[in-house]
Every structure is written in structure tokens, then in C-alpha cells.
Length: 416
Image (cartoon, rainbow, N blue to C red; front, side):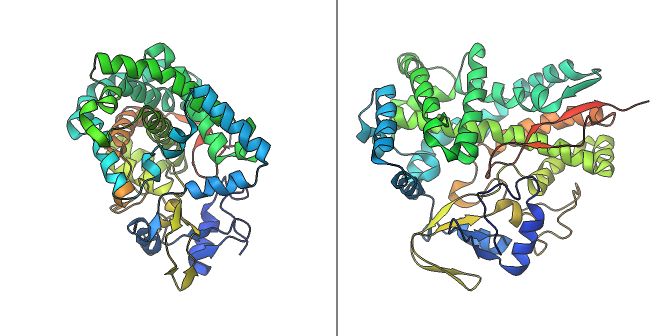
């Protein structure tokens, strides 16, 4: 099979290709990229639960990409980054990033950032999230047409993650812009020209933006995540300023774009399954089940990346040391060996064990917050959705081979 995970061929509807791979080549070596694509549930779980065999440290892929650039191009990018942030390049090279770390370094970092996502802190956001949902609904209720992504799915998580961090309301638009650039530049068409993708500009702009805020929180801590991250009591395991900026970069995608895409994908799926929409509208107690089923059915992250630390074998396929391994979460979640009749949205389904938030030591840090936001939004929006339909049949997706979401979802009132 010629399947390539990084091209656009299957972007809009990858699920038929995933099914063919599960049946014919459950561990498939992509002919161009050389990545090993893992599509069955049992094998994806094996990879995700084995950090001693499959490393999350994919920085080697960036080194390979840099070697494909000229020395002059590399020098210009390095100068732009270090001059823009006014940092020694060695500090950038040695900085830790949570999503790329393996045990034991990962556990030390996770223990620090977990303090900003404790059950108590998550519960404390429930009332504020409900207020934001009702504000969004006030904007769209009764309107003849509107874009669900623009009016609901974007403002809610952007506002929440900004307030969690402690960012002034007038600067929230910056966070949305930065997250869009990171996704397109890091996992979309921007990869074709890294120098022009804007990713370095985002890192520089965010670093400059955060520096005075971090300095202020050290002098006068507040009840926000930045104060947690700069807390000096973490000792030697504490995060440097560079590492805090890198973690916030991660939050811009994981804590913002992921929830936007969860909401957009869920609403789009309900429009395709009107009987399920009617079920949830008639029984709001089903909303948490809807959230989990939407995550399984069409999750916001297609796959994660791992590197084989040693020679391995999956489904009888030898995987050499240093190879890139891609557990396809969205395929595992539609594996009929684990979830019967997987291509149908079913709010009564037992979704326990779905992999939309990952598994193992890198299980999504903000999963509880994303579930809280999605449940609050859908509980209020589902009854409204009964009287709505798509304004046009075409669907526009986020420019990414890894992030799965609707770029827009225009809706209109049904004719009486």
C-alpha cells in the first residue's frame, strides 16, 4: 500500500484508508517518509504503554529536517531565534519540553505542571465555563445563520486557557493567532518552507510577551497557571523561562485548539446522525457520553509520534532502532476488534479505553478541562442544534496532517 501519513490525500476522510490498513497492513511502513504506521487498537496501546521501547523524544526528526537545509539557512534560523529571544543558543538546545520527554525527566516536569490541573482547580472553573457558554449562546440564539466554529468553538477554549494562564482579556486574540500558526507551520503546509512558516516568529513573540508577565508573577504570585510554573519552590526540577514558554506553546495547541476541534467535530457528527442528536436533546444526562463518543468517533488528534529506542516487532513487522512509529489514535478508536460498528456515532456505546487523549505517561494533561468545556457547551447547544442545518455541504478542514478539525462550520435555521 502506498499510504503516507504526512500528505493531503486522505486528509478530509482518512477513515476508509485506516480500515484498509487495519485489515491488510496493521503495521505499515510508509514508502516515502519511512514511518511505521500503527493502525490497530492493540498495537497502538502497546506502543503508547512502552516508553522504554518507544521514545517520545522526536527531536531527532527536527535534526534530520535541519540537515536537509543549507548551512546558511540553518544559521539564519538560529540567529533569528536566539537574537529574537536574546538567549544563548545552548539554553535553547538544552531546554526540556514536556511532550518530548521520557521518564524520569518527564515525571519531574509533569509533577510541576500537574499542580495547575488538579481536580480542585478544574472544579473551580466550572461556573466560569458555564458563564462563557451562555455568553456564546446569547450571541447566536435566534440568528438566521452563523459559524459555530467562529462564534462558539473558538471563543470558549481561547478564553478559558487565557484566564487559566492569567492573560489579560485584550490579548486573547494573540493566543488564537499563535495557535493557528503553530498548527499550520508545524503540522501543515507551512512545513514546506520552515523559514517562512511563522513558527519561529510565534516562539519569539510569545517569549517576549511572556517575559514581563513571568517576572511580575515571581514578584507577586496570583491564582493562575503562570504563577504555578514560575514557583521557585520546585527547586532544581523547576522550569526555566525557556521551558515555561515551550510549555505554553504546547498549551496553545493542546489546551486550546484541541477543545475547539472536539466541539466542531462533535457538532458535525451530530448533524450526520440526527437520531443521536434527538436522543441527547431529549436526555441531557447523555451529554458526557456524547463527549466520549465524539472523541472516539472523530477525535481532534489523528496520531502521535514515537521513536523506536531499540529494534522491535509489531504484528510480525520488524521495526529498526531509530525508526519513526506513528500510533494512529483515530484508527485505533475505529478498530472493529475493539469497538463494534465503529463508523457509527452511538451515545449508548461503552467508550472506555478510547485513545483520543492518548495513553500512559503522556495522557493528555488537560483532558478533564477539555471534557468540562465540551460538556458545558454541548449541554446548552444541543437543543439549539435541533433547529439548525449546515449552510452548505462542503466541509473545510484545518490545514494539518496531525490535527483533525473543522476550520469553519456555517449553520442556518431550518425552513419552517
